[in-house]
Image 1 (tube, rainbow over the protein chains, first blue to last red):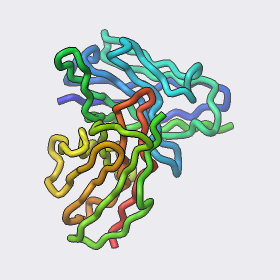
Image 2: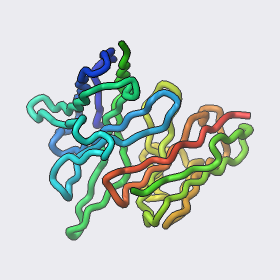
Image 3: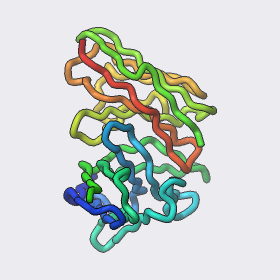
Image 4: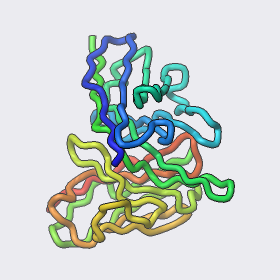
Length: 126
Length: 108
């Protein structure tokens, strides 16, 4: 079955950038539609962005546009999330998750994020 | 952007009793709604998608209902392992995909 294994915890200083990786096993990354979600301490789940099959590209939540880039390396079956200009507000656990897509008679159907990585803790502190 | 709200914020239920969690969308999402369970220190787990379809391996005590703007997650007979935060999520109109703030289920 599909498994997503994320990179380890990171500690960064304010203003720095961080890269979180998400390695896929049991499936080909190019056939998954990957998204990234985070949870800050004491807060709920927050969608950061992911692949939109109707647009054919990654799309990002407005609050992260200009600071986040999501990419993938199909040769290593690994997805990446880069976040720049870090502040203490970016301290959170970051998750990758796949959102299955069905194409039926020209329409696109989704069914919830069914597989998640274990999470990567990113701490931003001076 | 569709805003999701959930009630109550915290729910205390005795083992074996029914737990009913509510989720409301600021505009219709049809049945493009999912429920997730997140236990401390773990990743979220998909429970329900398309408002009422149980995900693979989810026990039958979890059920979802609703359409449009009003949704319900019911745990028919609460077990001790159901202690968690439960989130609803809409995927009808995105970006952005939006989550509710969560309902924390405590065991009474």
